[in-house]
Length: 293
Image (cartoon, rainbow, N blue to C red; front, side):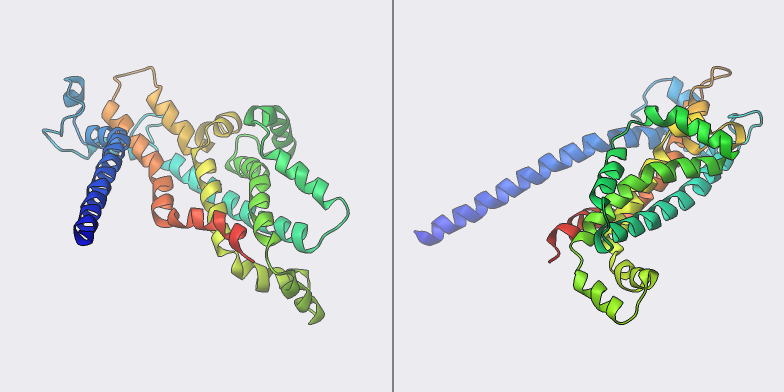
């Protein structure tokens, strides 16, 4: 009798798990449907799309829309495609992410291991900066960029994203370092280690999980940003998102939807790769500071 009850429970558990997996698979397929439409239609000639059947597989497969989106599409004055704007975004993202992460780590280090008067108030102000809407900083930031001579340049966008991102990276590293053993820092000070020696040799080597969080967060926000790019960059200095908008919103010529789909996938590929490669470490990094000690 007990064996029969146990067998029934096992079968019921298997059925329940199967149903759960089927439901999850259904939701995953529904979530992936827009990506399927984009990929399929980016591999079709334009006449297949305009003829209807956007959900159908291509009758004639072609990579011409991808080539055109990358190197020939009319975005600015010259038919350069998305290629130069893609590299603009790379030149903007890499230094902005690196600098904001390093400065956030330094701020977190100072705010937790080198306490000073009113440090809590300073951290509160930096935390408050995380919740300031983008639109509020447009006019003062435009003024600052104009004074510095960085308006309309890639380095101007680097400065904008650096300033706006420091609040977030400081929050991450401050919470992570708050539970880091202070005794190790004190022991290093007794041994004669200075401010930067302690940071580079003790704290930073143990900051891998939270550094991944910072890099993923900053990379995603900066790469996908449109408002700052449209406001502070112009012409050949525009980032990928602005170029993609100009490509899709063009009011002249034939709407080449296959080229638009290919361009959208090209614009989304870097963030997809970041999450595929390092996404599993994101939640680990967020939780790391809460379970130490």
